Image (tube, rainbow, N blue to C red; front, side, top):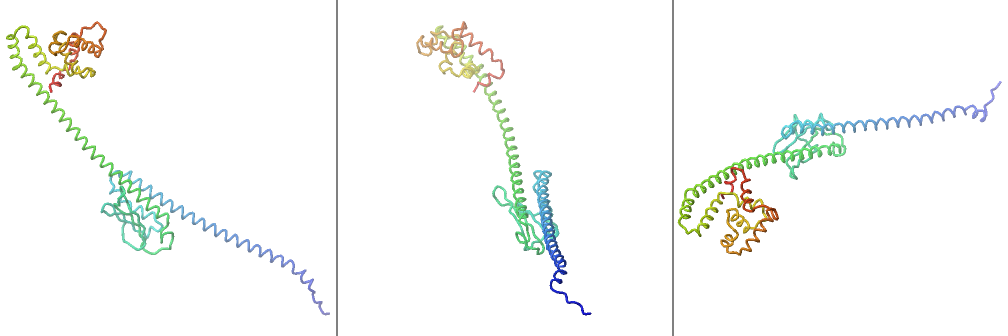
Length: 336
């Protein structure tokens, strides 16, 4: 018996589940492809982040290493620079093919097996605005192009920062050394000045002793002889000359002027006469002024000495004022 030929509807009905399965498989295939691409993108981003972190770690190690070198070697810039090429070499992307060199003040510091190539990165070292050296990094063979030929932009920033820090540290060291030289010079000048001051004091003492000796041995004997020869009414003047000569080797006038700076020169001279026992009338005669003027001077002197309206004898006060000076070297200080 012949088989019945299936009609179109039967075929469509029988194939519908298969079509549905194929559609589901296609969607899953698309989703798997998307997932695969996503995983690849995630892996790529992860690898990029790891590389970036690795480069950042190198940069930090390089800069911290430089800081440690300056801390370890202090002001010895040469010892610091001897270790810098190794720091630079280890901090670049391909250290196995990297050569480095640092030049500073006509000296060179190189990594082992150093040689130049056409793949170079460099930065100047400046001290006080003047170029004194250079940092250089070379690759010994061609590598894939990155930001700056085969070099990363982070490596450009790193070499510039290393050069900048080295220049600033060198400038600080130079300034410190110059300061030490100036301090030594100032210290030597102070020592020399103290020696000069001691010598001046010795010379002043010698001059003072010479003046005192001349006054005591030559002038005073003459005045003593003259005092006995002149008329009694003139002896007061000879006595005043003697007292004023003694004043040359006495600190009264200088001390009075120093302690009471408001006293005028005329008032200081009148104080000296009062201290030596001259009366108002005698002072007026010697200075060729009126008695009233001398009296006004005495009033002003008492005010400036802060003894106005006090029951204090002016000659006694002035002599007591000098007696309070107990410094044994005071007489010498006022010889000149």
